[in-house]
Structure formats: C-alpha cells, structure tokens
Length: 336
Image (tube, rainbow, N blue to C red):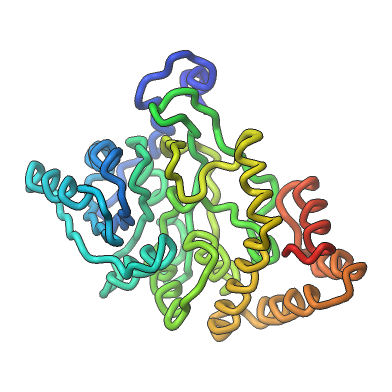
C-alpha cells in the first residue's frame, strides 16, 4: 500500500472514499464486465453502491440486479437511479426467493452467453474506483479457457463508512484442501473470467443447497484445477450494519457470533451441503481432488480421536495455525 493509503487506517474521521488501490500500469482493452448485484431489502445503501459503480475507472460494464423479494423500496430506487443515468446498461430481474446464495447463482445463470468477466456485488458496499481495473489486469494474464477467480481485501468500516481496518491477508496459497474447510475469497471482491463463469454455471446445475455462493465458487474453481488470484490491496468499503448477511470476521462480537453458528451445528450443516454439492459436481473436479473430497467426507465419519489426525494427513488446513487448531477441535467434537 502507498503511504497515503496507509494513513487512512488511523485517521479520524475518514472520508467516505479512501484512495483507490494503485492504478494498473497500462490502459486495458475494452473488456465487458457483468456486475451481478443481489438485492434484498437494501434500500438504505443501494444508491451509494450504484454511484460507486459509476465512478469505476474501467467504464465497460453492465449491471444485472436480482431483487429477491424485497419488502422495502430498494427495487424502485434502482429503477429511479437507472432513469437518472440512461447511459448505464442495467437490467432488473426477479430473484428465486431462496436466499442470498441462490440469488447469486441465479444471477450467474442469467449470463447466456457468458461475458468475458463477471463481478459479484453486494448491495451495501462502496467500491473504490480502481477495483475493476485491478481485477481485469490480473485476470487478463490467465490463459484463455482456464477458469480463474480473482479476489482482494476490503476496508472494514462501520455503517457510516468510518473507522477503517483492513481485512486479513491470507498467508497460505489458495487451494482445494483449504477451500473444503474455509472460504478466503470475500464474495463482494470476486471477479470471474469467462471460463470460470461457465464452470460455476455448469457445476451449479441442480445444486439446491450450498453454504455460500463465494465459498462455492472458491471450492469448485480450485477443485477443477483453476487459478485463484489473491490481491493484497483493499478494493472496497465493506459496510458493517445490523443487517449484514454474514459480516466481517473481526472483533469480539463477530467471533462470538461465528462461534454461536458453530455450536448450533450450522457449520456442520454447511459442510454437509458443500460435500453434497461437490459430489453432484464431481465430474468437474480433477481426479486428485475427487479423491480428496471422498477422503475428507470419510474422515468426518471416523471415531472422534481419529478425525483431526486424518485431516492433518490429508493436508486439510485453515490459513492460520490457530484456525487449524480450532478446526481440529471442531472436527473432534463433531461440529464440522
């Protein structure tokens, strides 16, 4: 990060939009990006997000908004914003009414034919101007036909976009053994190339239950031997408020909330759903990763004292040692 960007970590108060990540070294060709925005009761913040899309350095994008049965006037605000910006390509569609993850899969399925790139977009963030430029610069270096997923860090902030903190940077390389037990790719930063779009579309056919759309994309792309590109630069303002679907994993309250999820058995249920979905999509996995998936599923059924050892032997770990130790504990207690 530049020194100017670093100063925004401690400045009080901070402006609504800190410096964008460093610009790409050369202008990119005209590459169309489909921005996929899942909307559900997002009226409070949707206009700020839409305005940040309009401020992108990369101008060649169109927006698809899937309204998943909002009870507020979020969809009306999207239509009003589109009317005020007639030059923007925007399509508003009806969501499946089956939750956040399925709404994003619904958006992906709406891309026919697949564009060169697709970016997931949450309704309550604020993108920094260089977000798309950085993603396309990285993804354009991937050989044509190879699935690739790009993601980056975020500035975690409060509802008013103050008190910025950078999200974690993961020390270990991305991979399927990690993806089985941890999602490191924040959905609001993910951009997929055309091959990845097609892969996730095909692999998601008939999949009814997944833990999260971003986790599923990370799993299926690594499982198929695709490329995952991790950018250390924060790409957007990740707004924390009382209606976040998941929220940032930072601070005591966030960790307590996530441990409640674990203790209630929801993490175990998510893992069950992910394994079932990956088994249904096993034709898209490499031979090695199909075997790893089966071994992981079998390890969860072992006697408690053997489960953690089995995961360690398979190389299934979280990004940090402490997280891996907690993973082994969860596995031993039957909470994974």
